[in-house]
Length: 266
Ligand SMILES: Nc1ncnc2c1ncn2[C@@H]1O[C@H](COP(=O)(O)OP(=O)(O)OP(=O)(O)O)[C@@H](O)[C@H]1O
Image (cartoon, rainbow, N blue to C red; front, side, top):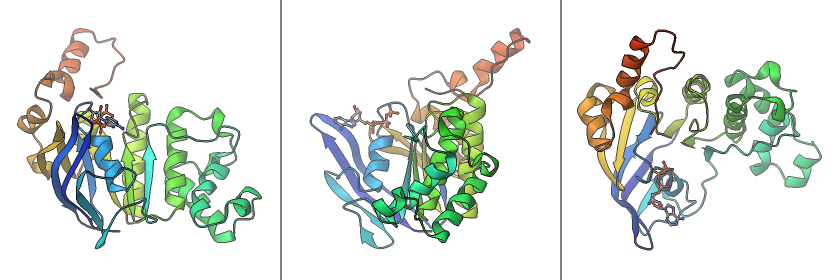
């Protein structure tokens, strides 16, 4: 676990103010959902939190150390999981140990026993132990994303940053991946921040919510305060019924044969 302090963080890309004076602290072991419409600054925030993007001003401090480059104890999960299709789930998970094992050693499969054990344990955490030897290319998008999470866990991180990890998945797979992210956070004692488009998923899994609008924090609070007013504030110009699934529910009520779910993204 680690404590992440974001202090007066701003990031400008040319004329675009992607983040403006963002400050918050995530204590050890918290599972935080970062919400906002497209372009609100979610990816930029997570990338700054891992030192992949340099802030224009302000700082990110992890366990008392200011971050200027990717932190060895922080792992990232991306929307594009970049799983190697020709390799098994197990071999993909094992590549998470590359940071700890020399590249050549790893390529020649000479990882030490501890790495191998960690890879299997991580696959178990994401519910894929039985599929360990399955070729990744034959797995569904959701399973591949779970392999991506396993690979991140093999790094033995203290912090997990997931940038829209379910954006390209169908609602059922998105739900499963979120469940495994939460399990991984609890089982591995992580501090986790996940950016999401889908409000319904955020409501289901989030413990704390940070809402971004045009690069600024417009909400920072816990589940008991995360209500429709807050959602409206974050998604000012978006149809609230649609966001919360209420609109979808009405459609379902009108058409009982509909096979849709209430998971809606923007
Ligand atoms: N490398 C870059 N160069 C120029 N502009 C950028 C760059 N990265 C992000 N931006 C701009 O910064 C703003 C915030 O982008 P960011 O990707 O952080 O938002 P987001 O909330 O993650 O959006 P999405 O949900 O669509 O991924 C946007 O206006 C975007 O166009």
